Image (cartoon, rainbow, N blue to C red; front, side, top):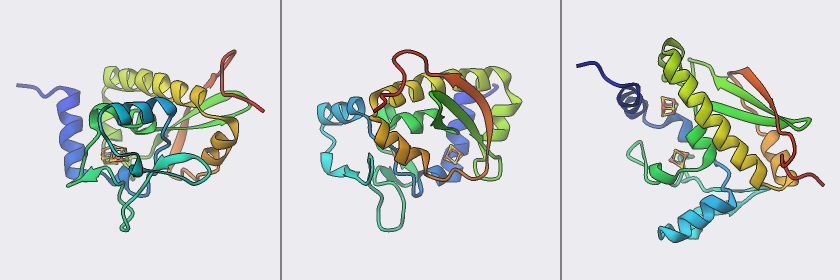
Amino acid sequence: MMQSFEETAEAICAECGGRCCHEAHPPLSPARLAEFRARGVPISVAEFDGYTRMKSHDDGMCIMCSGGKCRVHAFKPETCVAGPFTFEVQDHTLHLFLKHESICPLVPYLKADGDAYAAQFRIAVKSLMALVRSLPWDELEVINRIPEPDTELVAEIPLGPGGAETE
Ligand code: SF4
Ligand code: SF4
């Protein structure tokens, strides 16, 4: 029987062991922090360093990664949901980037399956829009400065009214 893309992705990520979770420090939106509280995740997993983010272990792995798996998979941070798409906000526009195949083994499979690509693109846009709209501009500016090498720009989406909070 043919595997669904979700099953394929799960297997690829398991084999990869969560490379994207190393030094990830995903932003934690107010909504995610509320979800953590509701589900009993200790708030000590979060820290503030220019923006509210997930801590990492001393070896750089995200504090929520255990044995290559995400312990908060069902309600993981918006940038984790959006992967392997990443983002930047410039001039009230959401810039979406796709990681290169060299750093994410899932990307070639995504590119080869138009339906899966479109589905994940929609999820990424929805998730990142929600994140961007929930963060203050000064925190977004810090996130914007985080280098994202080995990515390609795939879309530019105006934030429009109700976009990122500005000063
Ligand atoms: S999304 Fe890519 S980098 Fe992250 S665990 Fe999956 S295959 Fe690895
Ligand atoms: S929250 Fe989960 S998916 Fe996101 S970086 Fe941490 S372990 Fe990885």
